[in-house]
Length: 238
Image 1 (tube, one colour):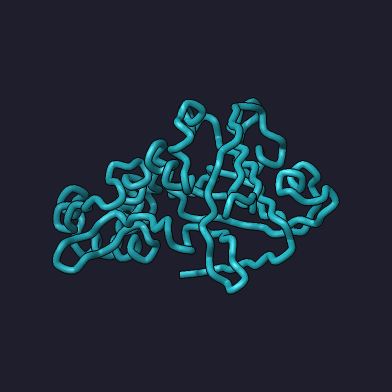
Image 2: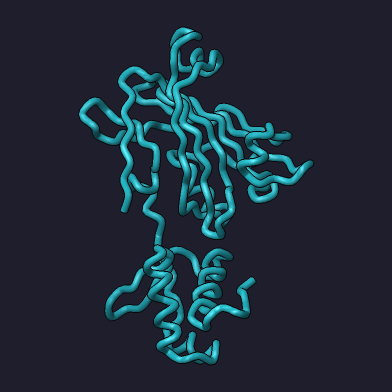
């Protein structure tokens, strides 16, 4: 809900952002003109323009000269939206194939419950997934999603998850990922090491990620493992 004490341009900004979050306007859709929004909300065109300037700066919309303002499409194929990237030795970002091995609804561990801001008794959906390149497993992942927000994902065809999960979240559940936080560590995990085809006491790179939707709420927590040998990490900020 928009705080009534906010300046008018911030109220308009919040109203438009909330409409985008609710998918009233989908990625690529044109937003009503500034004149129309001004009339609907009984404010000046200048006030609406100031609000739209904020939305452009925040990456929610794009202005196209001579055409209008549009809800920004998520560039899932770009490094910014892939976030963690598996790199080749020359630093090229690779796109491993994804394979969901198992999925089930269950009570999450406390770390996941805290990360996803779940209340006591709320369940989550766990996906066990591997990513392969040249038929070799390069990543093993446990992925957790709030069950209430992703109702129906257990019944989806597995092909819907390939090659990336985030487009499926947006297409089927109207959940667009706009921000992630990642934490890297070196760890040992015998089951994951076995899945990766290395000795159980092999040191692995552990990548914990929490992904957030447009409304600011955490909607995915995952733990990914890969071998530390030859590991490279690249961050792109735009």
